[in-house]
Image (cartoon, rainbow, N blue to C red; front, side, top):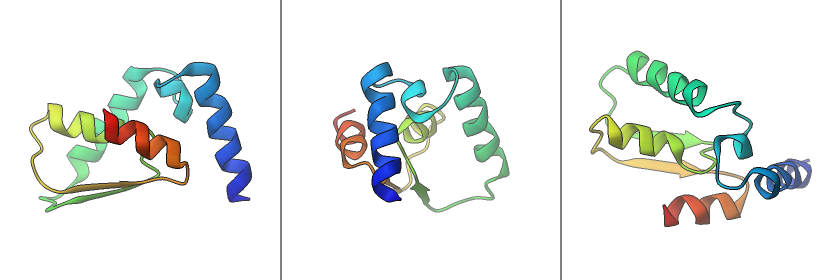
Length: 87
């Protein structure tokens, strides 16, 4: 099952490159709207654990909003982690 998911996301990455479509978002606006909701419902978090972080876009959104606290992103696609780390 994990291998199927990995293959699915690798195929999306091959088709769309390092974009929101590689992680199944239709556009950047809808992805960032979700991130905004997550920031609003967070009650003074000390850190973030982003399970299924994809290409690390949540961290980019948090940094743009001034986030300076610890963040850990994990994903089942090792290439995504490598790409996110490079960003």
